[in-house]
Image (cartoon, rainbow, N blue to C red; front, side, top):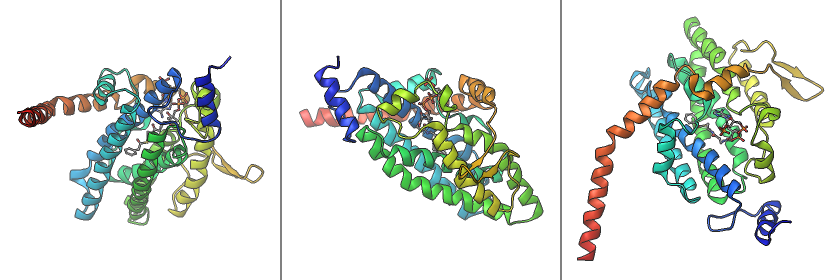
Length: 311
Ligand code: FAQ
């Protein structure tokens, strides 16, 4: 009992033809995309805060210049993603408003603090590393504008992950104190990083429908396994101890086994009760308020230009 429109839509999905902004789409497909792309955009923007916090304290001018460029890239990623959401009829202002009212989520990972310089290396390596695993898969997502944003973002994100690994290498191969800091950063950020992929498939409310629509092309658990498999050898290369005693190569599966994170912590963080949720939202609201004069100025300028064109 599908309508012709629905059948044509599903045919495109099944044949891996991208859905474009003016194509007919089910309301729930549109809503799911706005939720996911909007949450993704917010993550890029809120994600600037833990690292931005360390720009003034980077240990060398070179590290400072690199970190500044990296954080700026994240702002750009946010803009591509808000633009992708706008093609679905949801304005950037509305999405930002929902974020500020606490009615939209952003990635759980950005509610953890970055306590020292080793954390900045670990964020670049583990957090951008996890982000890439997820985003490489999303390059094949069914919605055209989202897919194209992902292709561009992945290029920058792989540079970010390499700079993070380079920074953590300097620490792990440095003095005993530096190595200790690197170990501590990995120990603290490991479980939050693997939580980025979302709850286990059995608990993931949106997965089934999102996979049928190819909004998601790999499941949360598949992507998490892929991240663990690529990251464990990197930890070993650094000469660091594994952050989870449950990590063990499983010959039969051809994958690393690992322990589940504490899912009650995850659900608590996404409910707004993580260590930094309040600070992050307050910082974003303040940035929005402090930027009001810039928006006012731009608007006044464009109105003046438009009036001059009409005259
Ligand atoms: N955090 O049914 P599912 C970056 C929520 S990378 C918070 O499995 P779904 C780069 C979910 O919204 C990070 N909430 O959901 C960077 C849902 O709640 P709702 C951003 C989470 O959507 C690096 C509920 O749990 N990347 O920013 C999380 O099918 C360094 C049930 O979950 C993306 O957003 C979480 N981790 O799958 C920037 C990638 N996980 O909405 C700066 C795009 C789940 O019903 C510095 N997103 N929830 O209230 C996705 O791929 C998907 O949305 C998942 C979740 C896989 C995150």
